[in-house]
Length: 93
Image (cartoon, rainbow, N blue to C red; front, side):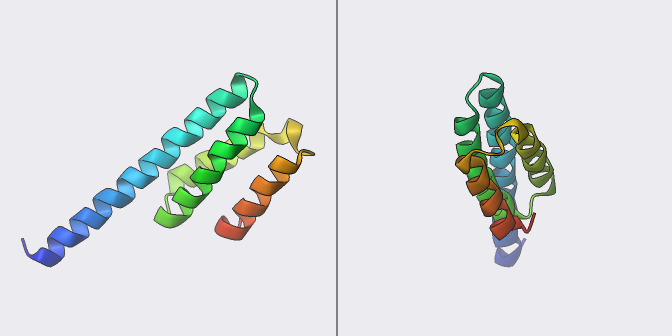
């Protein structure tokens, strides 16, 4: 295996770990939401937006959008608007 292949494998492994971390963080945000802490959930989702954008992780992006949907009852909160703005700016969602 050449160095080019090794570097490619390392980059792929990093992207996979980042995507997996985004999925896990989205699940943590949903848990916080279900425990009655929607603002903490939104704060965690901000990190997911960045990770999903950096890796192009489709599954993470799908989960992120579903989690955002669960914040609908709090849509009038400024912190939800901040999350929406972040998602639009970074993901074009």
